[in-house]
Length: 194
Image 1: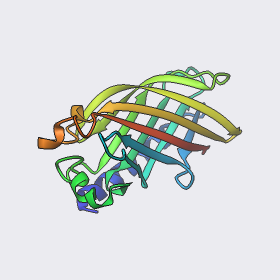
Image 2 (image 1 turned 45 degrees about the vertical axis):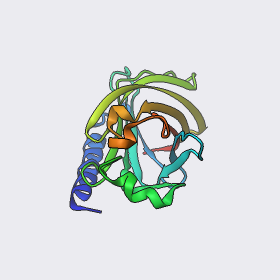
Image 3 (image 1 turned 60 degrees about the horizontal axis):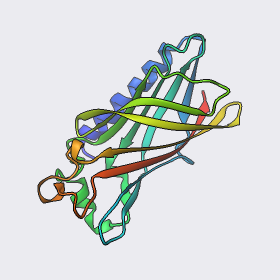
Image 4 (image 1 turned 135 degrees about the vertical axis):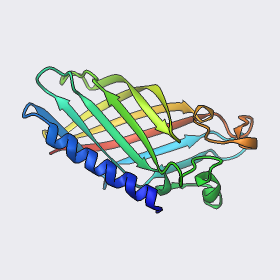
């Protein structure tokens, strides 16, 4: 891990602590159980197996404003270097500036602001901001919430986005004939109440 990646991880951790300390008594803070959660992705490939992988290192939280729902927020950060996928011999290429440029942009981030939810409903539809390679784009996120216990919930979600809009694949890899444009990310996240 390079020094820029370490600095970003420290800043993100400090940001999490700051947000936690800023919470009022009416807010609930939920954090990811990283041991049982997963964030996976898939990119279709013409005449070959799809690129399928997962991120092994990620962090995040959900903060719920129970009094008036004006400050509900979710933030998930993935470590690009922790990427594992079925085409292992191409890992260096995928982490290079041609695709993710992991040295310059070591993290990907999904940030949601002020979403509404209903404790009785297990579906949430919101708009999140996805940031990859220093570029941000608003994307729809459909979430299924499964209440497992009073202080443990499971969140299932799937999002998709254009890899070309984030410059994931440049030069001859920009072409979508072989490596398709749409990237799908599936999240299966377990949150426990702090």
